[in-house]
Length: 104
Image (tube, rainbow, N blue to C red; front, side, top):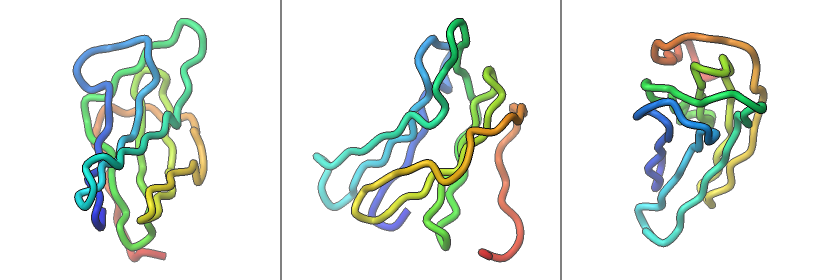
């Protein structure tokens, strides 16, 4: 996403830790930012074997967590700031998130 590589955690096996969206700068490998956009409730686990989706024209990342059944949108700026745009909202799928349509 621009000068950043974006990744999502918790794809290996169910875990007691909330998923993270992580961004690493290609220009400065010491610049790493992360957000935990879907906090777990007591007793919940996190697991999502599919990847998040990047909406580059709108500087937005969409992520989901299958076990708590939530989807979230994250705004991302090229200076490395991440913030929740909306969500998390109830939605459960183990499939990939696919964006369709024009940027607006």
